[in-house]
Length: 542
Image (cartoon, rainbow, N blue to C red; front, side, top):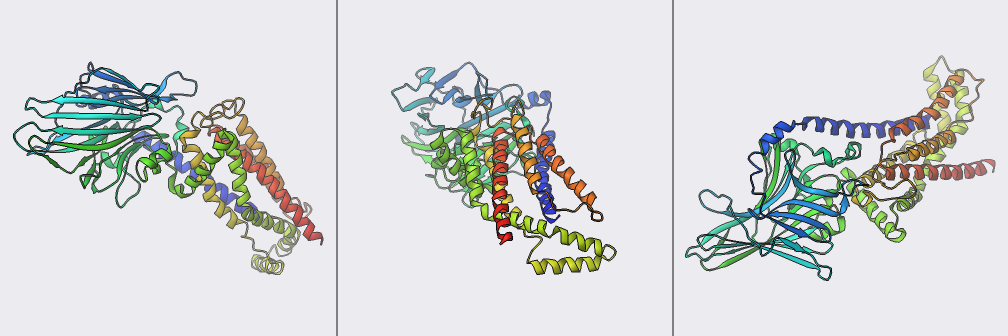
């Protein structure tokens, strides 16, 4: 019965974890559930650009619309990602409409008594730019010449296969006086979620949506919408780092230039409906008849860890692997390595599950041995319980003496479970938050490992494997003729059926990749348990 108690502790911890994630997300969504009318009103001060003057840019990964009025990106479609698995529509990351706003802005602040943003109307040589098949780089220059002769340039540089965009800001001062500027970049998003982009809310229960940043003293820090609404805003000077707006699978991030020394990162809200995270550089002087260049990088796209890490240190931490990221990241690297060999994420999940179970076998072996030793003692334990049924203190003393005599620790089966819990949770975070698994097919009807099995076959198979796991670990050595034992047997028999049914229902809408992991994990568990039992019985006969 001690193993059963340990198992129930494990189940309780696991169930509590999922419930905590669920209620946390539900509470968060309710708090952000603003009406469409409120959203429309809040956009009146933001959606003011002239939509007629636009530049269309097409690369192998992007379809982008830039507004000439301010040189800001208005819409971004990711050409290699679809809105849903069977959709012909590309996934639109940056957008603006009457209900939802998600934009990036950048430009120049003129440093004077007002420190206000400079309104610039840019011109381009053409309204359509395309990355041609034989080119690896596309340069899109935008130029604005003011009445005082000062020329401003914003140059977008795109590279083949890359989601980072290099921006070059230039000021040419043709006036007869020195000018003082800084460069800014912002990411703006409606606090209320865009439901059109949430295909299945249950998939996002453990995913963070909102601002985050990296600084000299903090590798990765979230600054959620609640803090921004309550005016608990970020204001921090940094030498290096980045700012970002996160959601499941995708991220938008500014990486400011380090050339000017300190940058300032900040957050603010607009009418408590729209959140802004931004940065501005230290001020710089442009002498008369002189010029100044400032470079920044902008990431818009999927959370591809390798590429993000190359762009800026710690940017790969935006993949939300939770508090066990230090375990999830190496597990993902192993999964990615296996995928490069096998070429199928489903089979890679199967193989990584087997590998993890292999390396945790010593822990599993200790757990199974403890279970079998307790099983073998069960007749003696039942005898003591019956004999000293009216003297609980005496019963406890005799049971402890029996454990000491047989050199058995009744809690030894719990320790392996505690050690395995972090590995299990890190795999859970890794499988549910890696964009590489989004819309990735396995075999037959499983064509999206990030979505639930529409025919519920995998959850049922998982329930069957769990049933056999429970059946195999149940205590078969109880003598039903002994006093008060029949009720224990009846309870155990019910548990064998109840636990698999409960988990099957619980996993019906879980991502297929995660359910596949459980199936393989249970099957390997049965095999390992049989192996331990076989050796245990051999040694017992000797």
